[in-house]
Each structure stands twice: as structure tokens, then as C-alpha cells.
Length: 286
Image (tube, rainbow, N blue to C red):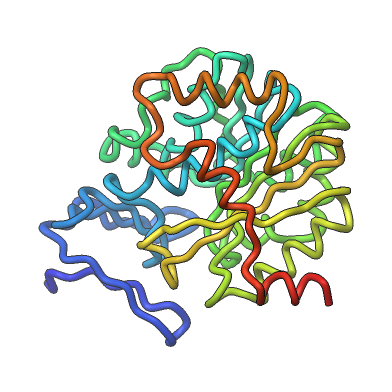
């Protein structure tokens, strides 16, 4: 067995980590699930050969997915996470004491089972009584959801292939808009702004059909294609993505004082992340 685990992205780029051992390598109903012990980043999860998360690298991704939405939404009582079977997004959501109800909808029960067993440093909040885990299709969950139910919806899916493909579709995104309160906030991972630029821009354009505001934001995630990553933030309310105010600002300040504190995210990161690269600005203006 090779002592390297490589992800090859569409035949154009390769990312690899030196591994000490392969802990899990099994096929679920939906996908190949692999968990390895790496020399540099601790334990890592791959789905269908694509790196999803790693213990020493996951904080940037999960903090950036969760906190820009939760510190700008006027209310955060009810939160939905679609995907996120490793538990990292759940952990970050439940840092906020205002959250009363968190639904996690994950299509692949084996991902949750294996991550709870083998990646306990990432998923540390599975026992929180505010959390309910549902196994099923996130797109179907949103379709069946009562209108205007959630204050925040977070989509923690993989690339738009296989089980996650529907999470980039028009019907799903419209369903999320309908399931949010009138001033609720939506956030999702949005791919590489370089290697997946078309997917990134198409997602933004689709969101702007259903939300009055839809803005991308950016940060580094070294294990993902290209190393530069993006997320999207959207709302039909009046709140500003880059300017937490009032109760939302209090939430951000409280988060910064909490223990354990965030490893990456803070006020300066929040504001700077919404700055647009020129090539993205020009494409969206066009």
C-alpha cells in the first residue's frame, strides 16, 4: 500500500498527504468512505476519494461556514444544517447559547457513525440536547419543511457530484429561501473560486434569484482543490453580511470571549472575507 493518499481533481490538479495508516475504507449505500491517519494533519475523512476534513485543518472551514451567518442573523433560535456528518458544523453552531433547536440532516448514516467513532476531536457536540440528527435527503427535508421555520440554514455538502449534487440545484435553493424566516440567513460552501469558478458563479447567480442579497466570501482551506475556498451568504432581510450590529454584534463579541475560542474566525477575518477579488467582481457585474 502506498504511504500517500492523493486526491486528483478532474485530471487537472493533485493534492496528497503522507499517511501513517488507513483506519476505515468501506462503501456505504451512497459513497466510498475512507478515514486515514496522516502525518501532518491528524485523522482525515475522504468521500469518494475527495478530502472532506482533517483534524488539524478543519477549524477554518467549519468556523467560516457557521459564524458569518450566526453573527449576522437577527435571530438564531432554529438552525438547520444539511450535510455535515463529521460534526464540525454542529459543534460550531452549538457554541451559541441562543440556539434552541438544531436539526442536522445527513443522507449517509454511515458517515455520522464512522466519524463519531474515529473523528471524535471534530464532532464534540453530538450529545447536546438541542441537536436532533435526521438521516435522509436534505433536498427532500427542505421541500417538506414548514415555510419560514428556520432562522439560519447552513449547507455543508461536498462537491456538486453524487449525493451532494442536488444541494447546488435551483429547486433546493428556492426551498431554502422558502424555509427561512423573512430575515433569516443562508450560508453554504461554494467551491474553489479558481478551479471551480463556473460552479461558484452559477451558485451565486442562482441565489440572487431567490434572495435580495447573496454575497460570496473567501478563506484558505489547504486540503480542498486549489487551496483557496469560498462560501456564500444570503438573506431576504436588511442585515448586512459584513457589518454585524446590535444583538448580532453582541453575539460575535461573546464568541470571541468564549472558551475554547475559535482558531481562525474573528471580527477582522469576518470583514475581510467579504472583499471580492477583481475577477469575481467583474464576472458578477457582467
